[in-house]
Image (cartoon, rainbow, N blue to C red):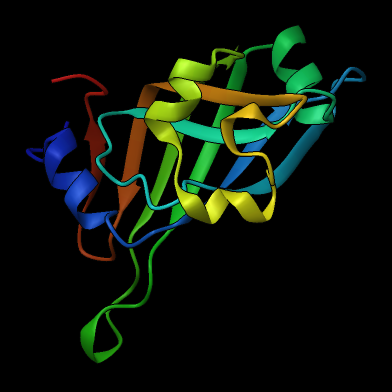
Length: 146
């Protein structure tokens, strides 16, 4: 186990906006798609992503909540390797407007034009179970909760 904490890792991940979310489909295949964290970077091991309720992502999660997230930062100074983070988690679907408001940013209006009142909107919450990172010089795991 690494000496890094979830706070250390969250600080290092602060500029990473997109993650790749992997779910398992009805037929057992893996489906992966990019998801934006909408600059919600005060990360504590829980990740939130807005989507529409009628997507494959939602149906995959409702059938099997075990998911994976992967993050990749930018290359470091003088060609240092980027930070890579792999998260195994348990996902759930939230349909509560008060929770939508807690995670809402105006940038989302591009995809959800009526804000938190957009019909058919859902919020995916992923609670990390295992977090592994690599940064070129060090790799390790951090505990999902402090």
